[in-house]
Picture (cartoon, one colour):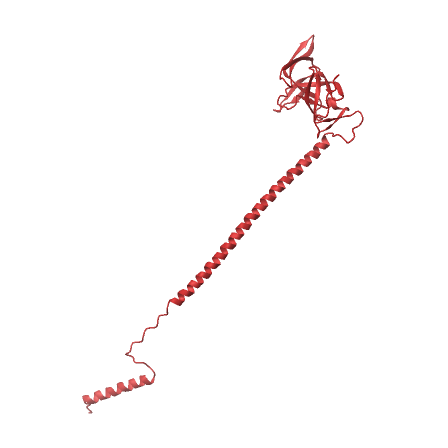
Length: 259
């Protein structure tokens, strides 16, 4: 049996270790007992500069977007104002057209004076002065071709009988002094007139002399409280028929010819 000595075993081990190290060296390996150096940490300065540049671009884009948004809002406000002004002008135009249509409609309903009035026909304005007898006063009258009968402002109206005949007592305010002028006249008829409140009331009718320009006629007047109206007298078709035409664009064109 072969017995190896201790010295021989150590030599053999050294040779094996030397062979292994030689193989590792030849294979290009590094020393396994040497720790590798840590990787180099990149510098943050370039990355920060890049981020700052991108942030600046974003801020600039946001500023441009905000400016465009402001311009759009200004244009929208201007457009709204233009549309409102256009709507206002359209309303004014519609009101003007309606006014013209109403004027044309009234012109068709109410007779107007022609350039040459027929012989014997008097041209009257919308308002005229009329002389009434009794009480012997000249009063302002509205000329109304839409009313069949004329009417007179009267207060304190009281109907009674005298010798079996109907009479009425009333008073007419003086146009200048306001003094109440009492009158008593024979009742010729009664008419129903619709009041402002919608109710229809019966009013007495009397006969009075009316002088309007060249017209001098005895006609019927209904007695009614016209204190809420501008004119104490209304002249209707019972005086105008076949004697006068009305030009509503004129006023006070005649004076009563009293004899």
